[in-house]
Image 1 (tube, helix red, strand yellow):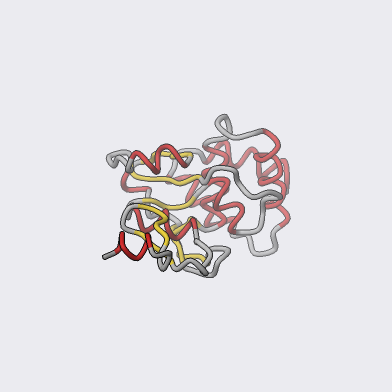
Image 2 (image 1 turned 90 degrees about the horizontal axis):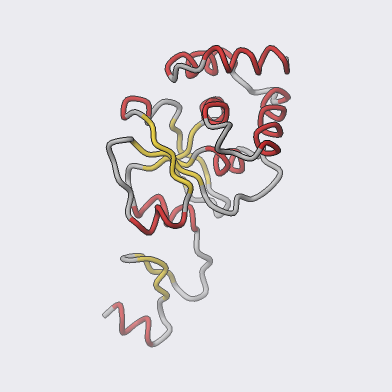
Length: 166
């Protein structure tokens, strides 16, 4: 029935098992989050969702547990970061996508920890912009940033960057 509706132009297939009406806009982030339950939007994508990035990411970044393997389509479409299973839910929130649907992402403090932890995999310009923008945020939670950094074993590096900027 679904293939028949697609042929008639009444539905559009956006991914395996996911369809939208032709007059609707696809929410790419919601679609990705529904394809694999064990992902959290992070790094450049989370920076964008929190409004502390000056550009829309070309490829979405997500984090998953080191003992999980996302589907091949997600691996091909996204930058995938892996973390210990016990740290996957640290700082995880539900945030509205640009289309207004709630999706899993990391809060801004955890995002900065991820950015610092993965600074060698990110562009220098994106990294520096994110760190400076975070330092200027009035709603930053330095206590939570320190807690996350301690859990992720990067407290010395985080402290170094924050001392320089604050």
